[in-house]
Length: 140
Image 1 (tube, helix red, strand yellow):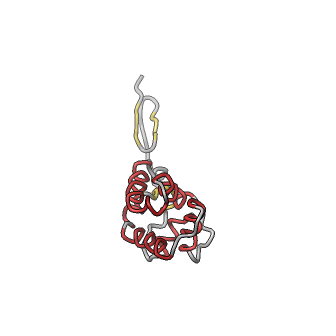
Image 2 (cartoon, rainbow, N blue to C red):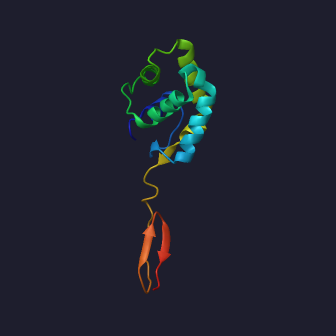
Image 3 (spheres, helix red, strand yellow):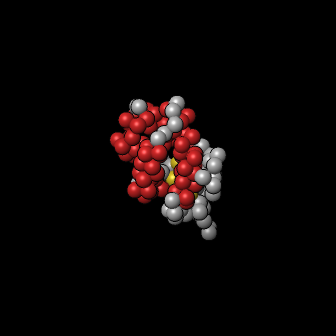
């Protein structure tokens, strides 16, 4: 499992994550997370854009403090806003993560599942082209 901030934070909070969840997934899931987080924290970050940047960063950055993920949250907040978060804000972010862990897990990609398509045998009169698990048979 990749050492990204969101994975370490979820594990630190005792939230179970499947072993192959390692990076951000579809833009749709990530946009849903950004929207939900921004509604709750745009005032704390100053702008919606900064709150969305926070979400993007926790899904993209490697953890600098794997043993203390809360410190990663604090560092990212400070990097984005230019000021340290109060204990209250930091605790609110952690609580939001706990309460929204399901949506946060949806933002993680099941890496490798698309490439685990097992094909025992294929027979065709022409080419069979496999694209992300969809089979197209060209009979030209």
